[in-house]
Image (cartoon, rainbow over all chains, first blue to last red; front, side):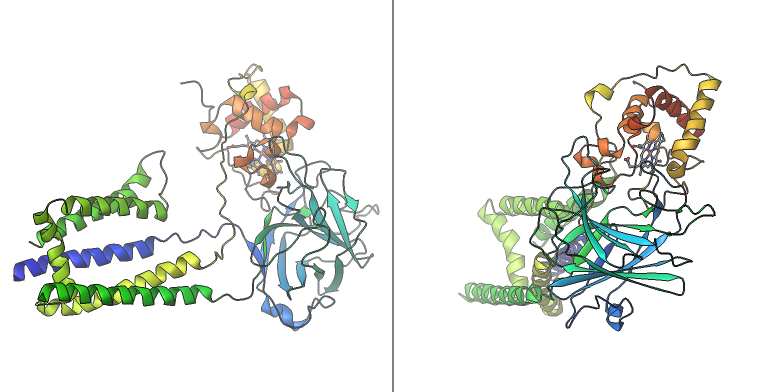
Length: 275
Length: 239
């Protein structure tokens, strides 16, 4: 008797360990790439105020920038090497804050955010055509210091950049202590899904960035202009959904069901034994 | 009697170990997703149960100890273990349920194929440029001018403009890049660039320029020679 029991014990211990093995083996989703996460806030978004206290509720994501050497005209060195990005949304509008160091404030300082539009993939360099994949357009939100406004644009290939007839993007820059802070705002969704990226909460979309240092060299030429700028690759953006606790409810329900199952099973077994 | 329970558990343990730790180490294989391992283990378990319950006798030998343990009749000090199991089981079920309903917090997984198949017309081409110290030197010169900002003067993928690009520029001194490839493949990649990749290569993310718009074919072939020479690699040839 004792002998048999110890064997059962070994078996059960091994079984439990195996079950725990499943838990440990659950795929821990690989955190590849970086994402800008926009938490939902109550009250109005700080659309005009890059220094508002509420920005502290968004965790900044930092992206490395390259001088644009991918297509002509190239530039081998660009001023901005890192870009810090925060974002917030209120369920209706989204606000994205770009922050970067730039030693001088110049009228031609400029920054842009790029998105894919719709379901088609678009190349990060202005949605240029791809040989084996049918690409879509990109939506570009542009700000230039001296214009003091946001510009809503589209491109599908080099030389196709165009300003949209309907402008949904607002932008505001503030320069202090060698740092630019630029806020872009737009409704999460617009009436133009063919041209504008549409942001639904909870889903990841692609995002890329560009920055121009509008400084002039000794001969009065702009150091960075047009395709000569600092660029990023595609990264991810997500407007966070309101918190969802349904997973806990389902789990509690499952625990209840499992307990009930055990209870009935053991009762049945006991009845069978005493019979 | 209880031995009939120990064997299946050991068997499942072995299968699990093989799937989890041995299979991924077979060359050319990859770690199995947890869901697949789970499926295989479920199959193994149902096989064991079917086998163990084939005859009335083996059925009793299989279920008897389990029944006794669950009801807790005459199991003495194993009572504690029994309560542990009765507590753990609902918790595991709850945890699995939570995991399967919780929405993912991570950006989409990116399984980019780094070396997808080239279009047919770019297989088996051989370098038409004679390999001489002179042509190699010319190739290295072109490389320095056009490629080194991204791929690096040391062919290590760490050029001054590389930092912002994801995926990063290829590291040619790494044995898993050009050393695994034929010259013909490089010719395709350099000529058509990132935008020439098929969908599994995620062409929309690649910063690799499409050099056919800027460089004549002959320069590209010379660059290929300079690249292999500079990175101390040699092209893969027909085996």
